[in-house]
Structures are given as structure tokens and as C-alpha cells.
Length: 200
Image 1: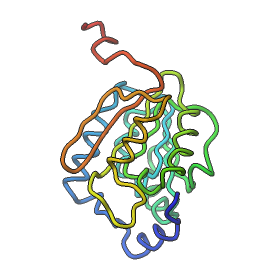
Image 2 (image 1 turned 90 degrees about the horizontal axis):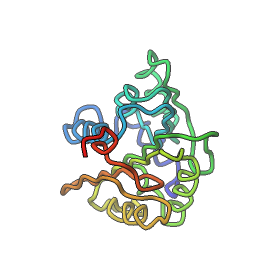
Image 3 (image 1 turned 30 degrees about the vertical axis):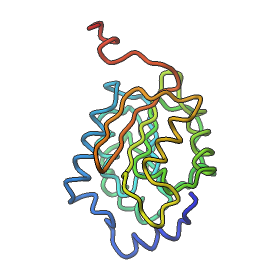
Image 4 (image 1 turned 120 degrees about the vertical axis):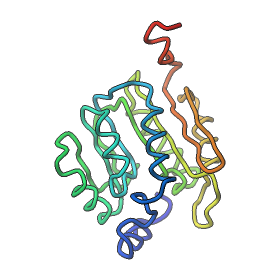
């Protein structure tokens, strides 16, 4: 990330839930919207980038055959591991993407509240390896806070503009309100849920 890992380590040293993921209705609602936006009922192999303390990870786990959740902050990963200790098909690891990246392909990659910590060139590198890791029918989910934050290299709106500008990703659905933008992308034009189920 463009912002150094020490910044996040300091946040978690002072507070084990620095963004109140567990208690804020905004965060609980955002997680519900994110999971509801997934266009397939199940994903065999999923990758969550920036899992923090594992709140979204726990909800994604119900939809995944296997899920790798990573964060650069060791303290956050330690908390997430405790939260998910009984969920055998979830692995939580310390990883700094995109310099470190897991092997293999994924049919789901989730980037929630993480991409604005990268500047434009670093985000381009992240998107490049993410696209290369998506299976042909895979999807990338991006969800970000829209308001500017002084120390973020990008805001959420710019993040989504850059993802949309990618020549290899197609936006297949989106939800936008005053605070957040949630989009699902695929590497090719995809059938809608209703089309796949023969409703249209």
C-alpha cells in the first residue's frame, strides 16, 4: 500500500476496532449490502483483501467453499483469527498486497474500504494482479466510503472511476448513496442473475 503498514499497526495498538466495525449500524448495513450484491449463491475460492478484524470475513464465509482473508496489520489478523477460529474453510494471514500475492485463481475477490490507501499507480498494480487472478467467471467486489479523508491518497469515488477505466473489468451492478459506493465487476460481460435462472 502507498500508506505504510506502521500507520495501521499504530491504529490497532491504540484500539482493537479503530473504525467501530462491530458496533456501527453504517458498518453492519454495508456488510449486508456487500454480501447481498454477490451475483452467485456460492464461490469455491475467494480472496478478501484488507480483512481487518474479520467482520465481513465472517459473513462472506457462509457463501464460500474456501476463503483467504488478509491484512497488512498483524494485530488485526490476530483478532480476525480468534473470531474465525471455528470456521475451518477460512484462512486469515498477514499479507501486504500486491507485493505479496497468493498463488492460483479466485472466483471472488473482495476489496472493501482498502483501495483508497493506494495511490493511482499502486492501485493500477493491485488491479493488474487481481484481474490476472480472477477465474473466467470470477467477480471483483469493491466497496468504499465516498467522503474525502485527508490522509488517503484517493477517495472512494476516484477508486471506482479508476476500476471502471480498466479495459479488462466490466461493471455488472452498483449501489451508491451519499456515503458509500458498492460495485461488482467481472472480466467479461456476464449474464444477470435472472438470465442465469431462465427468468428472462
